[in-house]
Length: 174
Image: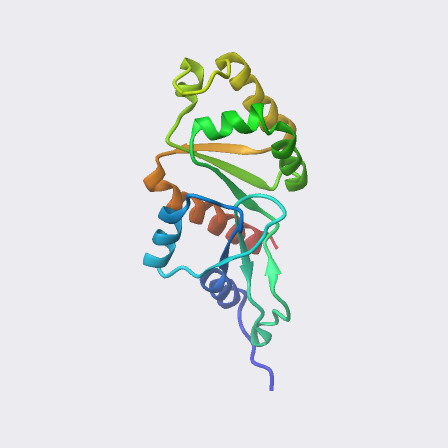
């Protein structure tokens, strides 16, 4: 006999059991892994097609989830304005291809910097502040990538919240 579950019960289960995926190429993220461990949020390391953090729901036959389900959304993390500047100047094709692969299903967090810092040139690279802001705004519009500036110690919570509420929204909308 198959048990019947309400949509609310299934949604609650999925949100509780979803596993954070951490791209195998992601470096300098000990503060994020430590936060996930402290909060007992399950996570796995796996190569992702785009972004640094994703979500998947493990299979559960009882709830009608017959195979692992990947959330088609990711969070890209930049550890600093200097890292992002380097991506825009030295590694532009790689980051642009990643934005293209995401097809607008990615947010980006930038630790330890702000839009004001870019506008005022408060970063330690030679990238012109006008070019920097122009590239950021162009990529935001062209690839529908949303940047979030945040302090490093708060970034783990934001990464989790971005993933969690994206999944929750998709579950509700169906």
